[in-house]
Image 1: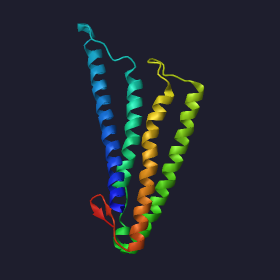
Image 2: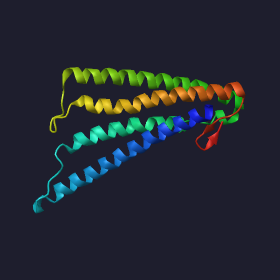
Image 3: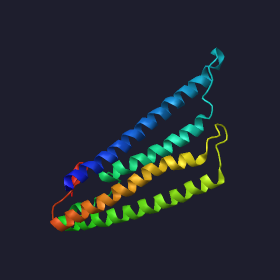
Length: 176
């Protein structure tokens, strides 16, 4: 059962990262089309209306979508100059503390992002050019933020299991 849940969590994180990557590719293509349209005004092309607003929307979504994947694969930046000289138990304790801190950060980030979304929804603020409601951009980022909390919670469980069983867990390509 534990392995099935782990596969599910990894699948959720992978799906979100792939979706974020596809959105980022769409943002890149829209930017290229818009810049090309500006360069080719003389043949009747034009830039995409509100291109920078679309870039903001897509980039925010993509960044939040990548967080669960980075967390479940333990690929956040780390300095191992001290931990590589420590024993397995010390490293498992550090992993547990780091995962608990990351969960706290994920919860705080999601909570404040939720507050911001509700604030933008209440004020009915829209973008300048396209006039889409700004809360849409906030809400799209919330999907990744909720995923970040879920995956961070799962990582705490994985660290607790490693600590209790004395068996190291995989961290991307390294094992602690």
